[in-house]
Image 1 (tube, helix red, strand yellow):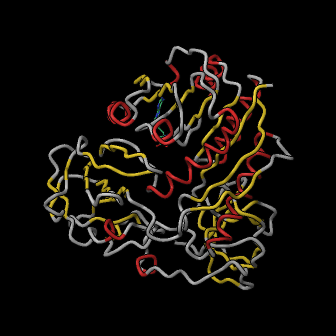
Image 2 (tube, helix red, strand yellow; image 1 turned 90 degrees about the horizontal axis):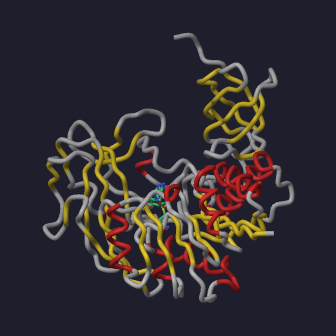
Length: 390
Ligand SMILES: C[S@@+](CC[C@H](N)C(=O)[O-])C[C@H]1O[C@@H](n2cnc3c(N)ncnc32)[C@H](O)[C@@H]1O
């Protein structure tokens, strides 16, 4: 194989996705894995395109004050689960806020958007759900940082201790992925493989297996049933932080009697934990809808893709789509329901910016965005934004 080009570059800022942006000597943008803004780094270019390149750090020549020694032994063995362990946790939050502000500037042309750091969950032991890859020996782990190999895990520092303790003993045959979840409130465990008929061993005897296995989690006093096949936030601390941010974003509208839309409502987290009198939850997963009916019996649960929901008038809406964001169709359905305020929860900075453009076309302007760190040590962002109808 020919030698890969090596250059020294200065990292300028972080990009969505977690790499640093720099420029090569020929003027092209290079996305550098492992560099931090302000650092001079010697990099190896491993992917060369006409307009941009990708590189990894060989040496850090001028380390940033935010750089720390990653503490996790599994990371040292090649685990790709935590791409930002070399960044001090408070600095991770500032970088995430800058990534969001940059996406709003570039994609939505919102140069003066108010973007603030809204805090984060404790940086370690926060995850109660892990989607794990299964190795050829049946052990579970995460994909490698620099390869697709499965790095079997003996422990995971970002996992809840009860979840981390399960990792070394579990074996899976006949599946490629295993989703393991524990309840921080009750100690219950569920496991779900991506193939029917998979054989899973090494779990505690009380663990429940399969998409319909349920556990119960507590969030701000609300007890929630969560089926293995349903979405849940990275853990109860993340769910509580998010509920608090949505409550703050709803502001004076929170206690208004009129109907409130909880779109992409999952197991009913917001409708259960917020003081809503008249909520309509729209959610497409059957599993999550069944949980929401148990968790928020007083709410109307409409089990359909949001894009196909027949809109009815609502006072305000909380909308929490998957990574791709709302998109054109869902934005039109939302606008047809006529909420005065939309609280948009986004887990991708670029889709937030695209949704801001779509909502603006329906008369909604962005008031502010609060960036939460629900996934410390990873570049994942969570943003709660307030849009008001003109
Ligand atoms: C990011 S999760 C948020 C769930 C919930 N708000 C929470 O915080 O727990 C997104 C949810 O949207 C659901 N979903 C995905 N696509 C959908 C669609 N087109 N229409 C309605 N719900 C959808 C998923 O099943 C998932 O429960």
